[in-house]
Image (cartoon, rainbow, N blue to C red; front, top):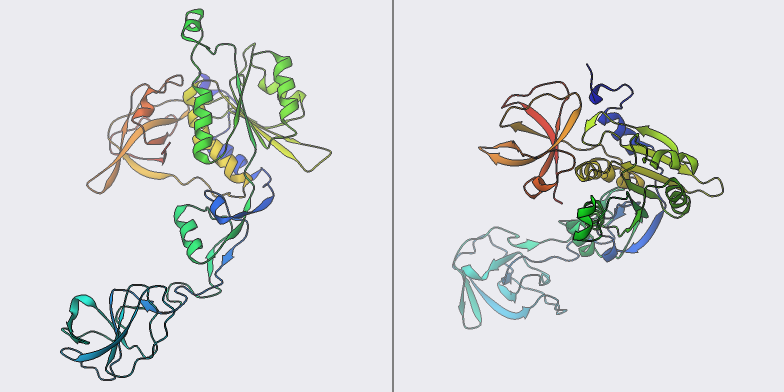
Length: 410
């Protein structure tokens, strides 16, 4: 078989992902206020220092009552006070007594039930229960959700909004997390247009710079975008400067075998060692991954060289970029691929492909609809795409066959 897809020495997608997932050395840790921990990865497990709830409380607006007998319907109780949420009043109920209580209010001593107000008839300073209720009804007991000393979160867990809220409720104020990588983005090439007039000179508008800046913002990292021309001296000087102060360098363009593709040779000149180059995939075959270790200090810098075509940049960041950034924060789980059903035929290709598709549920099945304009220089179908789908090499696919992919929400 001929063609670029059959080129010898190409690495498989899974082999490349495994190297990016396992080789980077995790960054150091830092302690942050919980409020600053959104989307960070925990470096230490968290255990609750309190019970949740920390005291028994009412689950409804109603009445705390004490009744030694099982019969409650049509029984009257004397109301002796009121407890609001946050109240420090201490009451002790005797048999046949009730206290008006609101949701979150502390259950007074002696309480056997809480009767929600919808089943209570108020009669002056007494109440009558209109229904029978079970013992301990509508009481949230101390520690029923979380026991003191119980593990709340494990090492490696991502602090999403729900986790942040749950930890806040348990009184957690500071967390230890892995540092986020410091990232430099280098856009190479002489063809980027500065104005509409530049288009007439054979240039193109820059999609990669805005794409990557937005991608990193969504991930939670601010990056500086650098533009350099296709000159070996400038590329070398750029890498020499960045490798000491950044954990990751992302480049676009200049990783193939053209006369002006300087990323690989300049990386080698500045001390980077190749981990892999060229993956049997489409788009993004010339993907380049290299590592630098400073001999003077315990510092590593990783270079992920992306092809220049914007679709290849987008796909490579969604698949490989996220794995690299996560690995540096000691998050080394393999990519979780979903399975879904194709709704149409697909021709075979010599390389495994990532196609932009639209996934939707129909009659309980996740189905996939391919989108037009899949070439690596095209981005317009990202307006409709919500997933990237892996299409195996050298196999024509029929409607109804199962394939795997990942969802994209950015």
